[in-house]
Image 1 (cartoon, one colour):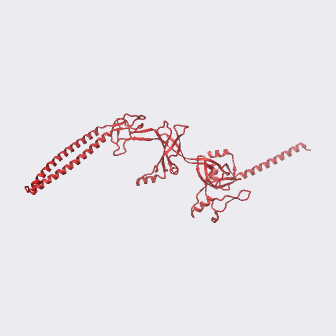
Image 2: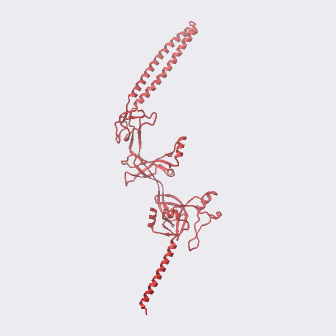
Image 3: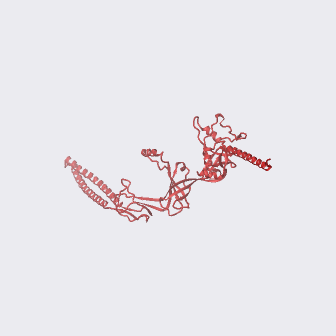
Length: 456
């Protein structure tokens, strides 16, 4: 006869196995139910103050700097400055060997003196011819000389008069040549046009340099005023329309870590850096437009004084627009989707209906942005993506068209489409930008999973 205790133990084991099997089946059912759900994170719509920034990289440069190039060619015989040296306005910077220019000046001076002598001779000849002409004219008036003698004297007088006029012009030409020779001689000595610092020195004593009279010339050095510095950054054509003179700027110079400097926008280029005038320049610009983005140079005056050096790398954050107490959502919550095409175009403006699982159809807000977009679209024209956010409603996601305003690094202003009591899907990145659609099943995940997925 079987022991009653062993029978009781067997019953407990059997019931335990049955309970475990039921639990396993329930877990599998729950897993299958949630298998197609998209894991999301959500955040409530809130009010914030936003400052829109345009970020650009550039270089620190002096506000005033002059590239020193000679106007005449020759050999450098004096270079009394070195790189980094401070100079005053009028200090000697470079002297070019003047021997050829002295000889040219002396030759021009001799020609000038010779032309003056010719002028004096022509004046004496004219005076003599004038006296002779007056004497013969008086005799001709009394019919004491022939017509031929009178005409000959008159011709001599006219020739002497013309010779004097030519001599005067020769004096002017010789004087101009002398002034040019003296000017060229003076250009062999170059003085500093401003008080500043020699920030670049490219030549040495004994080198031959080319003047700028006929070509670009040799850049001997650069003199800069380091007391006033600015940043020159390149801004894209989309953002440059937001930039204005006087806007505040935050600057980060790589050489000065953990420090931020203040600046002010002082100048905005009227034409892009890769634009040009003329047929050749326009052709070159059009051929490279597909490879090079359109950029406009913006100058920013640095307010603080520091030991900046020309060429230092800098990152500028220009404050373009500011909003206070506006509705905002995380910037990653706003994405784009193609508007849904209604099967009946005549009923495209009717209220949409979202069917939730296991519940009656819920009327949704009228997608006015979607309707307006469809109305503006011409027949046969493909639909354009609209900006939307997703609202978690139960275990489903609802797509809502929105109109956005300004944004900062983390949040974006919502002008139309949401209210302060709404909650929006804020993560993850893949779900918002690719997976989510109107009516998709969603499940709320941990906050940490969003950051991990976004980091990927």
